[in-house]
Length: 114
Length: 112
Image (cartoon, rainbow over all chains, first blue to last red; front, side, top):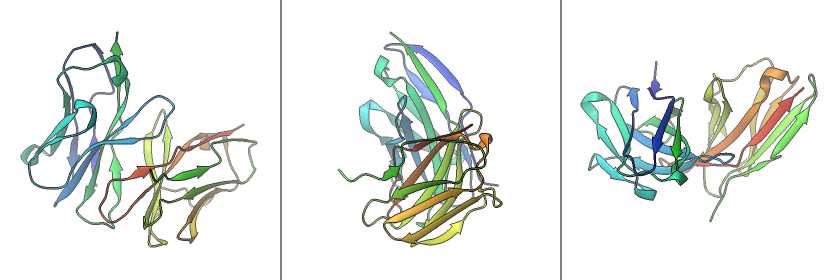
């Protein structure tokens, strides 16, 4: 069955620390990959996406993610986090088809200590 | 900036009552997803439509949940009868082609 795994449920960091959140998926075939962020009390917003081409994608607010096909991974990174990055982060995967469902991981809650 | 519009934002109801949640997709978006978010289960896909036709509703409890798209500008999710375990935030999200999903602000449902 198709699935998305985010192994870190809650990450606590200090400001200026580096961040890496893991995302692994189990899909056969060509995939599109996304990271979304949900600030407290808000809806999900797109951080970045990967469709094809350069496996290192850059998103908003200094976030980036690297698609490693051989590892079925799409980890999210940020070199220096800020207090305002406190939020929940969701990885999502879909097959390369406009009619495919989009499956989300269980989310990683990120707490930043000021 | 185009937005997905969901109503109501909050709904408190008693067990056994019918609940209807509405979603207005972004103009031109032809695929509509319904997700349910809870602390315990995270973000679960309930159902999705493409060009108003249901593609997958396997995530929905069939006996009490129903999802429809009466026209291209309206998607509905109904629960009848509602139960306390249905308490959650329900998100509608839409896309055009293979574009990323755009989410609405959600309906926070509380069933007492």
